[in-house]
Length: 424
Image (cartoon, rainbow, N blue to C red; front, side, top):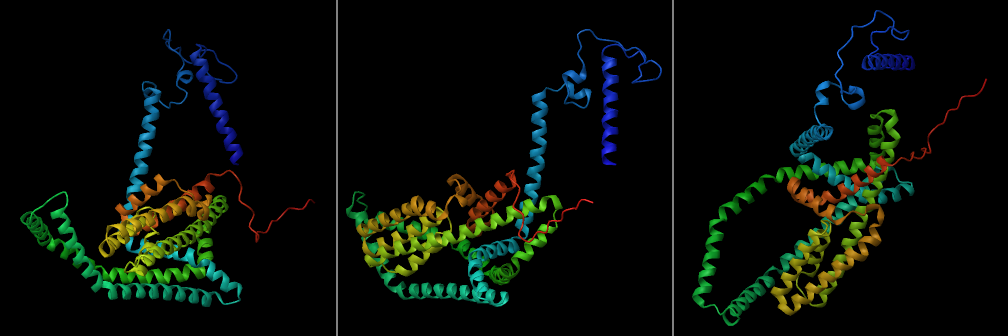
């Protein structure tokens, strides 16, 4: 039936083209077997005017013939881009409205990609899926809580010593202002100190209000943490079934393509998270060794800070390194601080030029400009959480788009059943 309708439509268009050609050549008054009936009334012919179909085959009305082709193309692009922009703006508004749900689910996906191999190992050891998932989740949670406890205890123990060293460092800086190239007097120093104190007092209310608003979000943080734990558990236990359910909602013709792109993206996400953890651990160990060798206080907490900062590409490593250099400056003076700065720069260079290409591989290679733009956009849209998830999101989208744009046919699933008709 579809073929017959198509052929009838094509024959109607052919007849219309024939009548139009006859009208353009001045033969519309002659009846033909292809167009039976009384001859049409003769039309006025403008000398020098060409056929509408010949000059403007892409137009649908005579009004379009008066608009230049380039302007029509630009207008077509503009209204389509406007529609895409409106849809994107609406999606961002929706995501911003339900960010308290989106961010925990995104964190749960990252944790699931990190912990999925451990669950696979326990499943191969013949443990039930629920038990294996619970063991991995509880073990990971215990490792995080234990690390944070050690970091906090180290900070609490070293705060008095660091406070004393900070006071000594401030006095050394004051002496340098007096005896150094600036040659500031005591009255000038006191005036600058008073101005700084007045600025702090004037902005105390703003700082306090920020702290109060942060305390007001404690319930949201707890809710998000609970949601992360539950979502991670079910992603690890039933992730494959959830993905199959989502794929079945798509049209049949698109299921294999989307399933192939989704599984490739999941592999990319897992490789990215595991490689980031490994690189962060190597960074923390390398910088921590220098901190221990030069007897810098808070060596373990600073190494933990470097480890956590490595999850924010480019920006996080820089900020954590700055903190380590400042602590070294306050505790041991400028010479040791310069040595720690050189160590931090050296470790980061080894990470960027050796570890990242070697461990990440080409599967998750992203241009640095895309990384910087993604982090900036993530900070603007969702703050620190946006910066954390920006780069893995770009890596996943990169893999998905490449798979969807590929012209190759995905491999046949191993559990697929091929039914062939037999000849009579």
